[in-house]
Structures are given as structure tokens and as C-alpha cells.
Length: 432
Ligand code: JFZ
Image 1 (cartoon, rainbow, N blue to C red):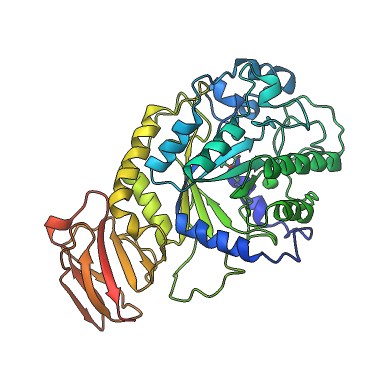
Image 2: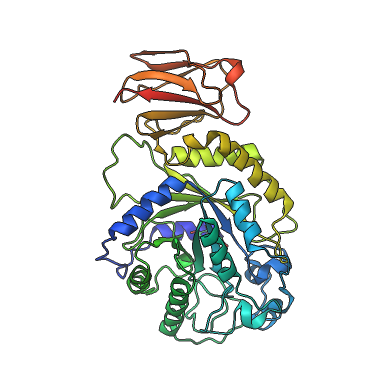
């Protein structure tokens, strides 16, 4: 279904209502660089759907009408939620920011909104604003917080005419679209006013109604007026719309070819981010045991960095507020790897060699990190570098890399001693 949707999305027009006159502020451009340096973030899908333990689309997939879905918040009581523990876990994983669902497609606000009582404080026995608790903790522990906000809404009566999804929600066949957009803007205003500094807004759901008047210009401007450095992105799977600050790729590496050494274009060349799940679900799914291994997850992170993109890795916490142990273990192992190898990831940009099947390159200044992820032989021929290689060492132990440079490129010798189970990293110092 989503594939068909994807194809349909490719043929629609770019919306004329995006923020066409947008000029990012210097603080926004700086935030973009900081975002690119950060490289690794934690995505969190958490909502009343977690109770049913069948993913965040459960309302739609099980055709639950609003009237019945409204019984769910009464069972959402995450008494074991500990914001400090979540933030500490993200940090232990080597993550530099958190992006959490403020509202998913079920329309349920995970924060204290005054726009409707369809929210965690008014409808759940827990009664607490978990986003506020998380925001305070993020600020305390020095990690950036962003909000995932669904533009698509299966609950709000004014989300009408309806789009591709949400047909079984049992809502009346009428509604005032602009009233819905006012509601969404009012909630966004709360999110950008009451939670301190926000790293960005990660929009999703535009694809449900690609031909609608989303009034993006107004919404994006509202965000940038309230917090100029907040980065706006949208999961519409199209070229970025004006007013957006980063570009995202869901479960996919960006289709870019080579990073090259030119790094002057700030505008029109937006930071990239890819997001992925640890198993195959975004929201908590009891029956999904299809976990990626730590090795696979590290490879995703490294390949993303080689594509010049951030990696936003998801967890779907359980309804009791805990993050399941299978996720925690993997995140901690990634963090241990990053403690040793972080210099080849953080603060880097995509390297001079386009990503290959054997691995990728990242770079920082005149240092190129060659990440050998999958290569059975004891030597590897790299294409020619933009500058001669002055010296080369393995990141693992600082030992010299034997290499020869010629017309065909740079040949690296990889002795068994330095081969790493995850990623064998050679650091090449290029001539200035
Ligand atoms: C969306 C959500 O529907 C999903 O629940 C999750 O939050 C994920 C991160 O984002 O999934 C999408 C969004 C867009 C497309 C496909 C899945 N698309 O354009 O094909």
C-alpha cells in the first residue's frame, strides 16, 4: 500500500504554498551544522497505541473507530517512565539528540495541550506531561530535543476531506479543514513555547493528502518566528519544500553519488537524515522479534555518515514507560563502539569516495576515514584521492597502514591483526 502511495507522491506538484521567501537565520545555519556534526539521534514512537503492542498504526490496521479508540488512554499509565533514564540511555548510545512523537496519526497529544482534551494529561490516569519531563531532562543532560508531529490526524473531526488513510475512524462526513490547520498551528505554538529550546520539528503525514492546501508557509513561518534555529523537516519523500531545513529519508540511504571536497553551499544543500527501526516496528510491537544485530545497526550508522547523513534510530517504548531490553542492549553496544571510534563519525561529512559495497568514507579537515565494513581480502584498492596521501594509520591501534599510491588509486594493506568485527577504519592524512 505504501509503495503505491510512494509512486503516487512522485507525480504530484510541488506545493505553491510553502515558505517561498524563507531565509534561514545565521542561528539556523549554525544549528544545521551542529545537526550534521551530531550524526546520531534517538527516535521515539510512544503513544496510547503502545498499550495494544501492535505498532503505531493499530487504529487504522485494525479499523478501530474513534469511539472505541478513545477507551485506550484509560489504560495508558506509564508509572515506570523515567525521563532521566531515557536521556541517559541515549547518551550512553552516543546519540546527540532525541526526536519524540508529540502527536502521531491517532491525533493523541503526548503533552499538555489546551487545544483539546485528547491528550495525556486530561485522558490518562498518569496525568503528567511526559514531553515536559523529557524536555527538562534533555536540557539538564545537554541533549537536543525535537518533536515528531503528525500532520495527518485520524481523530480530529475537522481533518476533512480525509486522505488516503483513516477511512474507518467513524467520523462524520464533514469538517472544516482550515479549523484543523488552526488547531495544528496552535499545538505547534505550544510545543515551541512551553518546552524551552527545541531542536526541530519532524513533520509526517503530508503524504496522506498531497493535493491539499496545507498552508505550509504559515506553519513553517510560525515555527521559525518562535524559534529561528529550530530545524523543520518533513517526511514527504519529495525534494525539500521551501522553508525546510533538513531532508529526511525513511529507511533508505540518500541516492547521492559523491560528496566531493566542496562544502560551500549552505542553502539549497540541506542536511540529511535517515531513520530506521531496530526491529520492524516504530511503535511498541510485542510480536516483532525481528531485531537487527548490533553489527547491522553500526553498519547503518556508518553508511549513513558515508552518505553525509545523520542516523535517527528508533525505539518504541512499552506502555509502562520502559524501553525493552533488546533495544537497550543494542544501543549500549553501539555506544561502546562509538566511544572508541567516534572521531570517525561525529563532526565528519561524507568523504571523497562515493559509498561502495565494501564500505564508505567520512572526512574531517584533511583526514579521511576509510570504513571497511565488508571486504574479505587482505588489500583494498581505493579510487584516487583528491590529494596525495601523506600518511595512514589504523584507528584501532594507531599502527601504520602499508599503502601504495599510483595512477590506479590507493592500495591499502589490511593485516588480519587490525580487522574489526564491525568496521576496520583506516585514517588517511591528505596533503593540504
Ligand atoms: C511514517 C508513519 O506513518 C510511521 O508510522 C512512522 O511514524 C514513520 C517514521 O513515518 O511512515 C511513512 C511515511 C511516509 C511514507 C511511508 C511511511 N511514504 O511517503 O511512503
